[in-house]
Amino acid sequence: MTTRTILAAAALALLPAFASAECGWQKRINASQCGDGQIFDAASGQCVTQSTS
Image (cartoon, rainbow, N blue to C red; front, side, top):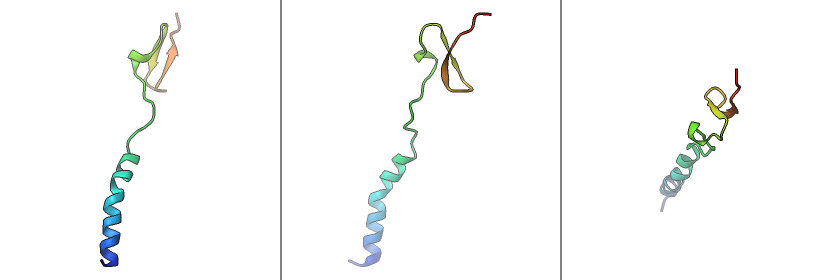
């Protein structure tokens, strides 16, 4: 095998690892996951306590 073939095979073997690194593995929440008395704040991406005013 030539060096070029080995490098191409290594690159193809590593592509799935790089692709999965681009995925968002962060914990993402939405309104249905907020507790009682809380609402989802889209600006901060977190559940916040609902103020009564």
